[in-house]
Each structure stands twice: as structure tokens, then as C-alpha cells.
Image (tube, rainbow, N blue to C red; front, side, top):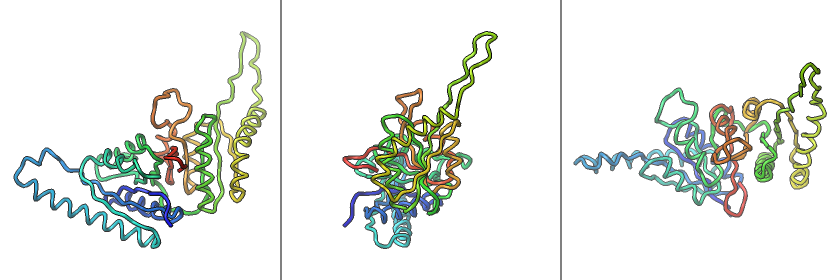
Length: 293
């Protein structure tokens, strides 16, 4: 019995091959259908030329070859999963976002064929990660790693419960532990003229923040007793801590928005920085349908 659908975008690059491998393993864990999508970026302006039909036919054949190669690769990684493949025509980002409408998860590599080689994240991956209606995984860094803990960044926002549910489930599915990261800025010492500044007891502050996190974790630890959990409290920025943790983790999970100053942003600054600098796959957690991913 299969449950759910995972979409992976591929263009035949090394980055997208890593995304196909990762998504095939995830589909096997979930017993989900894996849909492999290649979007042929057709330049509609060229349709006015007599050779347009012939050119489009060749391009469609190449697109079929890309998806066929990806299907073969996914079958090797996860022989038991159900695989669908589709070649689409159009602008890659909008077409991939269309496929995400009925997906439980969409997976992309961090780099595509276009743009500048020096960029750390391709424009298509960034646009899909920012606007997707479902959770997104961008496979980057050590994309094939299957050991190490799952790391999750949490704050005191309303999204924290959903992010933790996603993280505990991901750790349970992988049979590994969970590193819970919480960062905060200690209050600045108060100064009054010539009076020496008051001493801020950061140890006490850290203890209070840790107690808040442990209270938040309690219900999930009861639901997932098989997942060992470690809490890390830091005064550094969330992005810098999570990038550091990503060097030893197999997956980093964050919410789509935190408590940043721009409340209308579709993807928080921590998520953006992780998509550019993390050394393992990054999961942007968003509620989907009636379930959780």
C-alpha cells in the first residue's frame, strides 16, 4: 500500500541526480509514490520560426531521456517504490510549483543548468522553496549522507509545534537522534551614567530558555520515545549555528517563517541562509493538506 506523493525535479545535472537518490530513499521510507518531473524550458518566442516544430520535437525526446535516466536511477536506489515520470514544457519554477499543488513533498537539487556557476543556490530551487504550497527539501552538501542526527531549529513562534512534529517523524523514520537548536540574544546589561552596568546572569537565562524548550518537547518525546533528543542553547544566530550543525547531521529542518522583522516574507532569513550554506539536505517544513510533512 502506498501513501502520499513525493515530487522530485530533475534536469540531468549532478545536483538533480542527488535529489533523485534522496527522494527515492524518502519515498521508500514513506511507501509513497515518487513522481519524477523534468521541465523543458521552451522559448516560446522561437515558435514563430519554421524550424520550431522540429526543434521542439528533439527537445521533447531529450526531456524523455532525462526522465528515463532518472527513473532508472531511482529504481536502483529503491526498487520497491512506485515511480511516475512526466516531461513538462514551460518555465521550470512555475511548472514545478504546479506539480507541488497535490504533493506531500517536493525535492530539488541546489543547482541547475542555468545561471552562474559561482552561485550557491539556483534560481529555480530558491523560487520553489520560497513559494511552494507544500514542504520542500533542497538536497545540497553531503546529499548522500545517511548517518548522523536530524537537526531542527525551533523558536517560540506558532509554527514550532509543526516543525517539531516534522523533525521527530523524520528522526524516527531514519532510526536516529534529534538535535534541537534554540538560539536567543541575552538581554543587554543596563547602564546608568557612572553606575557600573548590571551583570546579566546568562546561565540563569540559558536555564530558563532550556526549560521552555524541554516543555515544548515533552509531548513529542512521549509520542516518539525511540528518538533520543539533545537540546542545544546558543547565543549565536540561528543560521550560523544550524550551518555548523549541518556538518555532522544528515538533515536540517526549519520552519518556513520564524520571528523575523519582515512578517510578510514567505521564507525566513534562516531558511534562505541554510539553502545557500548548509552541508546537508535542508527541509523547509510547511503544513500540507490534512497531514504533516
